[in-house]
Amino acid sequence: MNEQFEHLLARAEQLIGRIESVLPHALTPPDWTAGFAYRYRKRSAGHGVLEPVRHVGAMRLSDLKEVEPQKEKIRRNTLQFVNGQPANNVLLTGARGTGKSSLIKACLNEYAQRGLRLIEVDKADLVDLPDIVDVVSDRPEKFIVFCDDLSFEDGEPGYKALKSILDGSVAATTANILIYATSNRRHLLPEYMRENLSYSHTDDGEVHPGEGVEEKISLSERFGLWVSFYPFNQDEYLAIVAQWLSSFGVAAPAIEAARPDALVWALERGSRSGRVAYQFARDYAGTHVADA
Image 1 (spheres, one colour):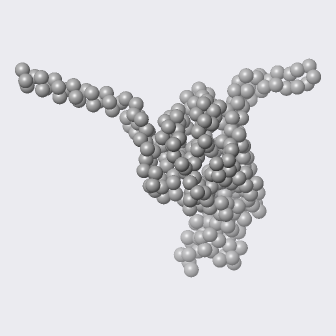
Image 2 (tube, rainbow, N blue to C red):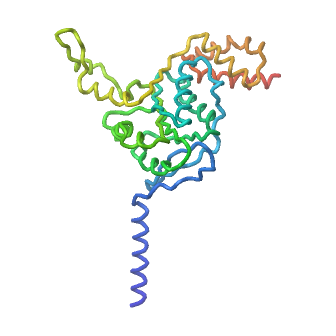
Image 3 (cartoon, helix red, strand yellow):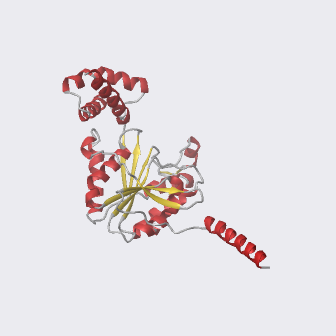
């Protein structure tokens, strides 16, 4: 009888353990001394964790060229935030490879010693933002929740979650959190030609968007600060190439000689973005050092 009871007890403990493994767990605070950037990740059982980023890129604001107006807007807003002054959630939109995410990382490096921290969250995990808020709300640091390359398809759950957060149900009540997001889509959702048919016209010639269009515009409007980025022209692209080559220790005469190769590199990739300029500079600097 005792053996049967012990067997049943062991089976019950195993069952309880399995049930506990799939039940929601409170988010555990990470080691806040382990770094100044974190990633929110979901484990296989669905439990979220904040993982310290051990190696953060050494990007500085001074490294980023040909985006001075955008850089000043983001720097000013971030500085206000760090200083405890009113600041806005930020949406950075525009051409790929033009420095949107780099500017956010550079701001982190610029103000980390003054208490700025960054938490990177994938769009699929935005529904868990209240848990992140609970963990950081009593911390003295200032936290940027960073969503890179943010876009939604119709009906995705993170869309409505982000709307409610930006409306103030969570983020605006917590003074030490802002949301910074980058996107190639101006309104974060796909826009279709057929939606133009939903526009209405008044007798005096005014044009009003339909409900579907209004819904798409409403999400991006919830970001207090919009920062737009545009493709670089040839001179701007070459200036960025020169900046990166200089940072890699390439001498001025070699930088001048690299201009034709930089243009060919961009032509082959069909883009004169800052990312392409950085990739060329790495390739050229590596070859230059090898030949020296």
